[in-house]
Amino acid sequence: MGLLRPPGKVVGGKVLLDGQNLLDLSEDEWCEVRGSKVSMIFQEPMTSLNPLMRVGKQVAEAVKVHTDVNDEEATSQAERMLEAVGIPDARRRLRSYPHELSGGLRQRVMIAMAMALKPRLLIADEPTTALDITVQAQILRLMRNLASEDTSVLIISHDLGVIAQLCDYVYVMYAGRVVEQAPTAELFNHPAHPYTKGLLSAVTSLRDNSDTLATIPGNVPNLLYLPKGCSFSLRCACCEERCCKVVPELVEVGPSHVVRCLLEEGDSHA
Ligand code: SF4
Image 1 (cartoon, rainbow, N blue to C red):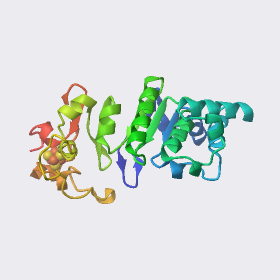
Image 2: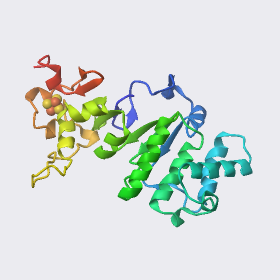
Image 3: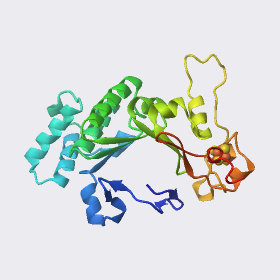
């Protein structure tokens, strides 16, 4: 994956799906990929569903765009998908409008729509943020089941609890760059980047007796005006002079564990 740099486009590298570089595709080829090979679940289902269309029609439409099935077959596939994601009384729900469903049911409709064509990759952007805690648990269980089938699930989340429960491998991003990547257990047990350590120490624990909540000082920099050198330098408690001059590279610190920090690169830039 290339780095995101202002004005917000991929400036290098490859985006590979089953060995195919998606950056080489034409607009028509992209239309083939969207929905059938790669699907996405957005953060807020109420704003992602069309409020004027019955949910059954929205799921059926996702099926029809990529297959030759007629209206009747698309609708019965939509019903099967609503059942598969645990929506009770799916036949009746096909005729509901989004505002008639709870947040959890709307998110299930989004998942049904995204999964209608069994994509190879499902991208889920904060899939449980808008949901209450019990519905969150149901949706997480559903996503885990999906990942155990033939679909890979890429979760984008600020919720470290969700990541710990669901993911096999984690990429920590800061200001558009990967700053650390590792298998989930390794990352949580042996975080190496100061930003990752800050995120983990900011998570409250019932075992903590402290009255003070740990925080990372400062704010994420404007991506148009990134500081020179390491983008985390303005907020990093371990910052050294060289950090404001040199952009760190990713360096290996353990099996499948990679970190972007000069402290891990040794003294080569001193
Ligand atoms: S390179 Fe320097 S500023 Fe950046 S994370 Fe490492 S120690 Fe902190």
